[in-house]
Every structure is written in structure tokens, then in C-alpha cells.
Image 1 (cartoon, rainbow, N blue to C red):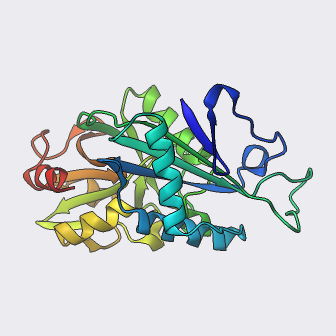
Image 2: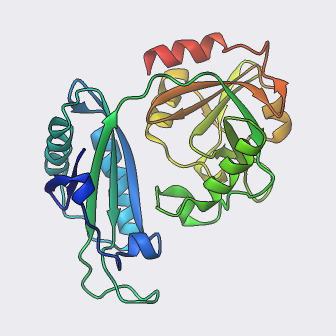
Image 3: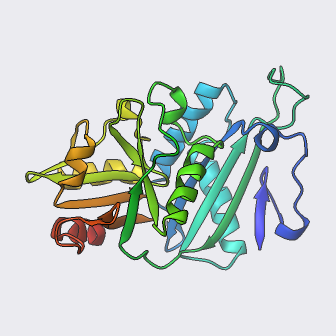
Length: 266
């Protein structure tokens, strides 16, 4: 497999990241997951806008414009003989001395990897995470940062329960998102999704789903979630129906009509 490190293509087996890189030592960085269809990166402008927003929040200089990044992605996809792919873009502050103080003149690290597009996931059975919660007050809830430990804890809880994913509540018990996706619910014939202020990541596919479904960004209680007639998850890979929550069926226990239509469109 070929990967790109700071614009240089190299074999993954021979690739090297500085062991003092703050992305490795402190999780000091960002990432984006980008779908490539027919050789072209989808929603690249939106992904880059979110990456820039995160880089600005963390104070990491990002010098690549959209055209340059598109060229780097294309080079990696082509080098791996792919046309339908999932690209992972990892951007860190780069090497730094021990401790939390940021380097005065950071030299960021940009790694781009690509793999084949996976098949569509089966409808999901999820749980409500009890082991952790989303801190909706933290600015980190709004960016794709490298420290995903809360998400990993929730996902491990789901795995222990033989579920596919875990729904994260925020500090006041409202629905935020799942460990790996944004969430939408159909309640009383209204399509709803948690607002950013409740801890939902501003997902790229989330925004597309809001436009297509005319969903309202509204706080969702646990009670509302559990009586929803349809529930689905969105991330860069598309739409995934939710058919069970904590062992109870959603609606009739099958993917809903609106969910299926959106999955086809997105």
C-alpha cells in the first residue's frame, strides 16, 4: 500500500512518523474521512472547511488549499489503483518537545492513506452508552480531533453487548450522536437531529441529510429516541438504519421508508 507523508508517496511498510510527533504523543491533531467515487473526492470543499476550522481552533497552520489537497488525494488513490475508495487524512502539529507547550514554529505532519470502499453495513443494533458521555460544552465536540477515547470507550461497551454502535448522551442526558456517526430520528412524523450545541459533530453527510430530509435541528430526549418510528446514522460512508436500541425494536424492527430513500440518495 502506498501512502503520502507530507506530499511524498512511500510504501506503508517503509513509512516513518517522528516518534515525538504530537499527534502520536498527545493526540494533537485532526482527521477527515473522505469518500472517493470514480476517482474524485466527494464533498472535498466541506471537508477542507471543517479541517481548516479545527486547525484554526487548535492553532495548527494549514497551508494546503483545496486544489493542492485534491492533488495529494488523487496521487494516493491512483498509486493504490483505486477508483472507489475511502481516504483518511491525518493532520498533526508535528514533532515537539516533551510536555504540553506547543512548538513556537510547528512543522505539521500530513498523512494521507486510502483503502477500498467497504460494502454497505447491515442495519445497526445499538445501545445507549452508560460508560461515558459527550461534553457538549467542550469546543472539541465540534471538530474531528485525534483523541477518540470517549468514542472508543462507548464502542467497546457496544461490542461487549454484541451491538454495532453506541449512542452518546451529553452531560444533561440529551442525545448527541453515536460513537462513529450523527443520528437522525423520526418522531411524530417530524425528522429531527441533535443540534451542534448538544454535542453533535458538524458532519458533512449530516448536513446533506438535513437538506434532503428537511430535518429540524432540535434537542432529542432519551424518551423521544425510544419512541421514534425511524432512526438512522450518517457519516462519510453514507446512511445506516438503526433497527434496535437497547434490545427494543425501532418501529417494526426494519429499516424505515424515509431511511431507505435517503440511503439511496446519499
